[in-house]
Length: 145
Image 1 (spheres, rainbow, N blue to C red):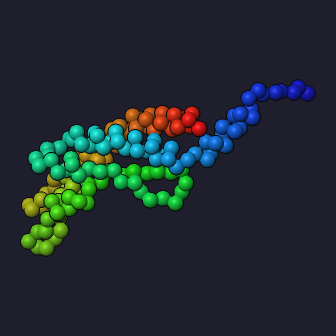
Image 2: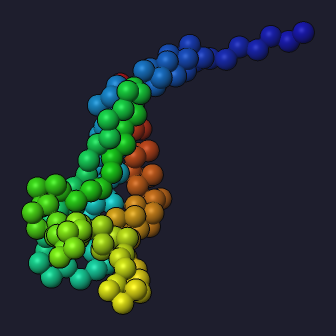
């Protein structure tokens, strides 16, 4: 029977334990850098924004989670601009302009005007870039530990 010794195994085990206890601030930084790429792409826009409010209103919002070492950001229109975006029709229906631009809307004649899917596409089109930035940031943060 042969005996195998691996040098540095103790250090590798220690490193794996440290990664398992990754501080929340490391995860926050990585997720924040990733969402910034999507935010910039969305602000550069694929739609005509005559007033500029849609571009100004794009903000990242962190989801609340109870799971440690997890951070999820979403792109949302800033609620501070609701006075500009929310309109009430003659029928009393509430229309939210950013949702109409993103997802589309029904026209008066019964047709459908498709949305631009700007926020969705800003994330999906840059998926590889976002993943690389998150991985590089996490790698740098782990190296600092």
